[in-house]
Each structure stands twice: as structure tokens, then as C-alpha cells.
Length: 235
Image (cartoon, rainbow, N blue to C red; front, side, top):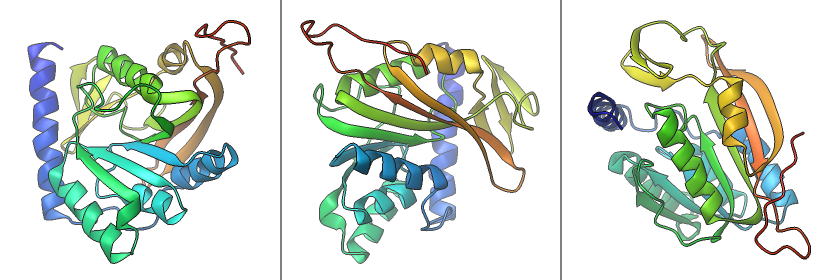
């Protein structure tokens, strides 16, 4: 990553840490709509262990745990994860939640094919370069078991804030102190290479409203007789 991009990412890390410190539980305890969708999907696939990237203070990770999943929650904010653990204990689900301070610019500290499902709500559209986003999705594919599903959400180029505020290049725009990488459909399709792209669903969230895509893609199982060979189908 270019030095100016690294500086932006580090500044955003500090900004988010301060935000969680100043506004504990800022998103409330109700799960996001994408998490509710993902829980139904994961349950239908008999998933037991869910990895959440960018869990923050944990409203979605806590929901997955209350729904009976074992949850591995990661975030680069120690404050957010501390709030998550405290709430999990208070709700009696602490045994089903583990947390790891982790920067998604680094490899995931998990073995290959070790989780059943993965979820990331607006994590990929933070201040990450396109190259870094591709690396994150590659890491998710590595740690998912064959047949495992990844559900992620991102703000896209049809959002009102796209093109507004401070331009950082690579379709990253900073507005109100928060930098966002706005996704094109071409980027979504590119990230699905080597996966089965199941759905790209447009939805809105918040008062602006923010315009997002909810993307569902599955790591293919090896084709019969071709162990390790990828199978790709676009829906």
C-alpha cells in the first residue's frame, strides 16, 4: 500500500478507536438486517462456527451467538471488542464468543478451511485499497471450509456520499471523518472470481440513506473426481 494510503488507514484506525471510546454501544444491540439474513442462510447450510470481520462492539456477533452459533469476532479496535465481551458475558453467551484484535490488512490468524461461514457488515468498504480488499477476500476464502458462505455488505457508487468530501483516490472518499471505499459492480464481480456468486442485493440503511449491496458468495466444493479443482458458476 502506498505511504499516503497507509497513513489514511492508520488515521482511520485511531478515529474508530476514539469513536468507540466516546460512544460505547454506538450502534445499539439490535442486529443489522444483513446479519438476520445471514443467520438464516448459515443455519440452512448447517453452519456452526461463524467468523465476523470488523465486529466493532458486537451487535451482530452477539446476535449470531444468541442464535446458537459459535462466533469468532475480529476488529482492529480493542475498545469495541472489550464492549463486545462485556455484553456477551452479561447476556450469558460469553462461552460462544471469542474475540481477536486484528487488522484486515494482515493475514487472518486462522488455519485453512477452519470456519463454516463468514460475515462482514461494511468492513470491506472502509479505507482499504482495491488490492487490500482482494487480499481480504482471498483470506476469507482460505479459512472457509469448501461449501462455506461469505456474506458481506458495502456502500456502492450509487450512494449519495460517493464523489463528496475529500478524495483519496481508488474510489475512497472521506466525509464527516469517515473514509469509505465505494464499490462498483465490476469490483464485486471481480471479488467473486473463484467463488460461486449467489446474490447481489441492493438495500438502504440509515437516514441519508446509505445505499449498499449485500453480497452472498460461496466457496465451491471440489468437483467430483477433481479434488482441489475450482468450480465457478455465476448466477
